[in-house]
Image (cartoon, rainbow, N blue to C red; front, side, top):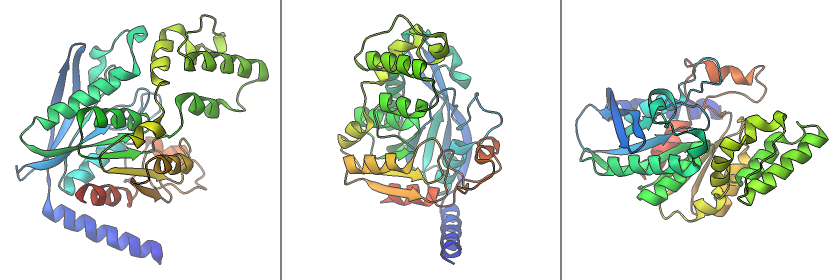
Length: 317
């Protein structure tokens, strides 16, 4: 009964939002940088009035503006669906392919030259460009997964109006990597992994990397890892001086709800939304689903019904 009531409330809220605002359709948008053009999608509202806007920052690896990863079969379109839901509620948005991904592939730096701050600089530049656009009344930031840290740092740097962490972690990158590899490596390789991680955390590159760990720690990617490891999300979120919403699903097999609780503990005045049954790609997937990864390649699945109302309610307040 509780679920039925919540579903009814969500349906009424969605219908009301659709009556108030309608998306005018997507159009291409470009950020010009010294390293090349970064391409994205701009979703405006049909009434042509000045609207609050949101920058959506995608997650790690080859994940594009729509939330789809080249490392996985199929599409989930999670971030595209989120942008459309925000538009129905009266929010314009920009989402983009990070440099080296999708339409922004030509803007990729040589791997050995790439730094985590490169992505932060790009996101901050998007915020500045949007803030200068007379069509937008304000600019908030939503960052998903690794994009949560990128968006967090960019929001602080460029002075966004609000920040939303979607499935973001609180722990230091080294802690995250250790947790992901715990119990998955034979003891000799686990010892090598710890040796390499400890060195990178101290800012020191490692010359000798076992072939079995080269995909993670090859010399050309170590400068990026070192630049990433200087940031501890729980510490950085505490420094934000804007309204913050932390959102986490309970059936996310990549990021546990404890990470969201730790972010909340670091910033007590942030709002926290733990969404029961939402997975990492923002879809409704039960904990006992026979194939929880199936949703990662199914764009027909809608967003979890509680996600958009939680974000929209926060942004409107």
